[in-house]
Amino acid sequence: MKICIIGNPNSIHVHRWVKYFISKQDIIHWIGEHTLGTAIPQGVIFHDLTRATNVRKLRYLIWALQTRRLLLEIKPDILHAHSVVSAGWLGAATGYHPFLITAHGSDLLLLDQHSWFFQKLTKWTLLKADYVTCVSENLAVKAKVLGAKPERVEVVPLGVHLNTFRPSLNPQIIRQRLGLGAEPIVLSIRAMNPIYNLLDIAQAIPLVLEQVPQIRFLIFAYNIDHDYHSRFTEYLTDEIKSGSVRLVQNLPNDQAIAEYYQVCDVAISVPSSDGTPVSVLEAMACGAAVIASDLPSLHDWISPEQDGLVVPVGDIQAITNAIIRLVRDAPLRNRMGTKAAVRIQKQGDNQFWMQRIMRIYDALTK
Image (tube, rainbow, N blue to C red; front, side, top):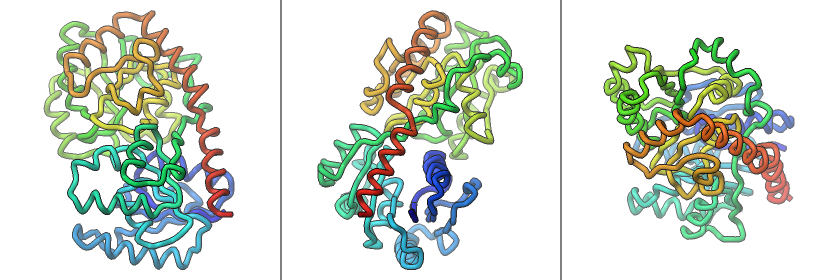
């Protein structure tokens, strides 16, 4: 099958999607509508729209024309946009069919914060799609409210690669290789971007260290918003200098990411809005005790006090209390981590969900 994807070339989720279909020997064309900041998987034919122009007020008109021209040349069996906003707009503007959209989260959940025209364009895009998959139930509800035909909307989580993301039998060996000691480790697992509220974690860190000074915080620093990164590091200057806080950057592959999940005592994700966050599911699959924002998208994956802890969005004291509680109560976090891993094994296998996507592709191309 010849598949054409439109989406952010820096998205780790889209990278994994692409790699799956490359492994099935499909022909993959990828049209990128963000400035390329990472290597494209081998075997993918990449088309960079930003090379033509990236002027804010003109780019989508020019990109839509360029995308239409590319599709006439490529003639894919299916066009698949990852995100309703931006990628979906471009796909809809070409009039190409069959056309599938995957909604990932903020593209719909934060739609009310945007202009009237932005909202109208997004609604029009959903109407143009032949099928819409959503990574969580609340996204599917939102898509239907915005006008997507209910019979053409389906919940299809991205899932987790369980061969890579699973509990380790030798976490102490991994700790030694990563240069980590025996201290409790709290890992922040989301991108360095305002929507993920890492500044809330930054405010909680000194409060935690006052009560449990031996804790070490590891912060994944990827997809960096440079202004936000500067504010984060400035707030924690002393903690970074002392070694209580360490930024983790430039991990080469999924196995390297999994190792951090496998050795952390607590993994934390506290955004204001989310679809089904793959990073949270991956941490759970590795047996980490998770602290997450109390958002509808996670209700299908985390039962509070069973598979993890949930905290209100923006509640610094609740974040602080949850970290201290899990770090001090080893039986509780071990029990939660074990239950979380079992749950993801049962519900979150990437192979199962990707096979569902293949069946959708087959149905749309008949």
